[in-house]
Image (cartoon, rainbow, N blue to C red; front, side, top):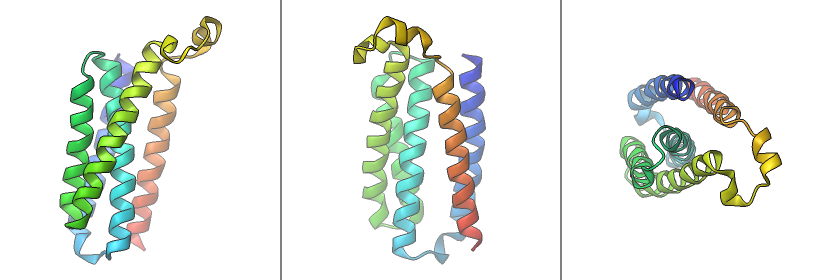
Length: 147
């Protein structure tokens, strides 16, 4: 439980930093670059934080979907008008995928995973790997903004 909170706070700080960097440099982008950044950030953010939310609070399926849509709307609103709908869609889809993965991590029998394989699957390995992947993606986005 504490490990999931630490991962979510680490990823939350990274998200806060990239949000303010995008807010500061939003007039320098063209529409294609805006669309790619909006899709990448909203999909990964809503996926990861919805998975964390389901792992922390198992019964909040609707809240994680709404959280994903809210993240997508905020990033889409930050960048440009056509990106709002794209951000909303990608945020909702990422929230749904994160909810499903979090539910499967808690109960592997949902996907008919055998008991022997379910015992070998650690609850913290996949969220940690996802958090590291998310940090690498945000670092590459931050690097692309320097160019």
